[in-house]
Length: 71
Image (tube, rainbow, N blue to C red; front, side, top):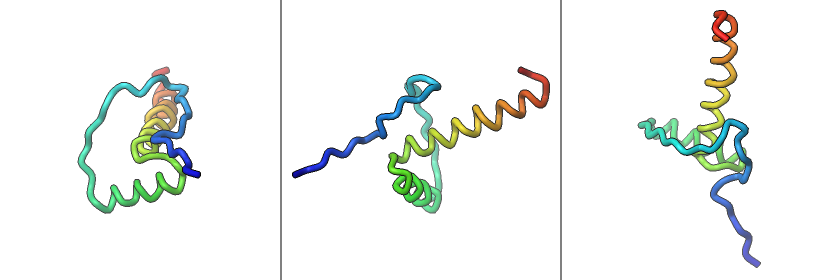
């Protein structure tokens, strides 16, 4: 019996549809680290990197804005 493997985790982001693209160059070491961490978390590379960016930009960035008085 074959198992189905999804390309995405199937979890929708509360931040909306991901319909924009960022193409960036990274080192081989960084790519390997991303692949390893994504695999451990059971998600694809893009989803893993997107979650990191969201956490930084909408977590840490929002707190910095709040601390600076720019809410």
